[in-house]
Image (cartoon, rainbow, N blue to C red; front, side, top):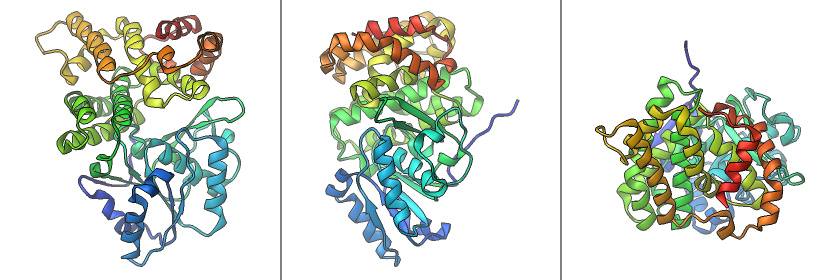
Length: 385
């Protein structure tokens, strides 16, 4: 059986890859780009640097910097208004996963109209929007190489999954030097997000030989370097490894799938405004423990690839070490429980059945090696408290 593999048409990877932006625009025949980013990228000077590079090639780029950390329908609609106000022929997404996810939705809506809910899964969006060049500034989401975006409905707090070839950036410029200024908390959250992508794509029911190779490579890079990057943001070797690991993990899950952690994580983020990587981290140990009985050999492979078990360890021993290490990682990276994060217990418990329903509706839990019932998802939520 063959497997469909979808990747950006153009990729530049390594130190100063972002400086290729003008060259790539010219190659794509674009001369009027809109930069979609957030205010922090403007303050840090990254946007100005990209504009200066473009000016050197005679290209003027305007900026929309009002993306938000967890993209919402209203923030996307504001971006669409900006993107359609002038005759832009391309988009440059600069920032973390939220900025890139925003740009993906804006690129589609600016060309085809409608509202974000029109494009919600199970619709598969294969139409090409405005050409999109993605420049990530965090090592986490892998959004620069994925065919997904997540948009939160402002009214219902539902996180809507949008899927399709149309969301794949046409080019990705993966420059680890842009991650050096990322603070420890964000380094931890995005790093665990990348690790979760790699693990889930490897144990997913949709895993395939291509995604397996990317997932295992990602785990080998992330395992020894996540803590290093968290404790010392100027560790360039660790930063480079994390950036490559995050991109490979993005390739893996985009061409396989994520599973139960992501399905259950999205409602926590939507209802309680927990950053996506952090809600993944809260869930990863519990979901792994729940899932191991259905894919013990695969999870043992993960433990070995990350470096938490050796080839001499039995499957059972490797999985024991995996669970212990995941819990220890959360402690070292100061991942809070929902209670410690400040979520009100009664509200959390009341919403657990709704969160379970939304998780199932996303489709991701069905990819898990052990597919949970709604009651089992509620119990996993309860165990996090």
